[in-house]
Image 1 (tube, rainbow, N blue to C red):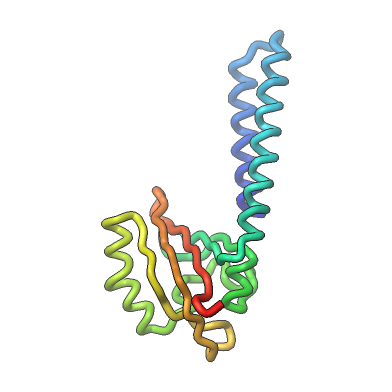
Image 2: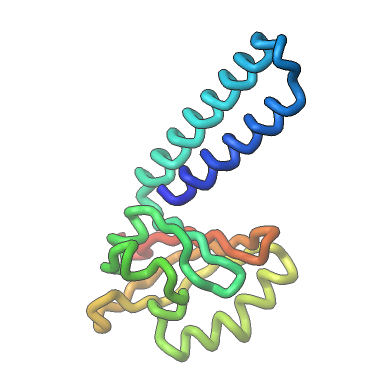
Length: 154
């Protein structure tokens, strides 16, 4: 929902920009811009719904490795609610040994190639259940990451 809100603010600022550029007499142009904004908002809503219905866990991390968004499959896979992980580090779901492997081996590959795909072992919220996962980490231009994951054994 946070991204929908941000996207809607973005669309509002686009609208204000065009309002400044269009003369007061050109209501047709204003209506056209409004229609385009409506289409973008509709597309954004459908995109978020599609991501939320994915069976793969999907999460966004900021440049510091902090969760900023995740879909429902990511919540279910690790046993945490969004409220429990948003604002927390990705290291929350890994043991120290695995964290070090990501830092020493995986992140340099992401820096060089822009992505990494491989296997990892996460720990669920109960702290006991090991989750063998297939993970893809993709670098974002702002330094953040897109994480997609799925349970290897399901």
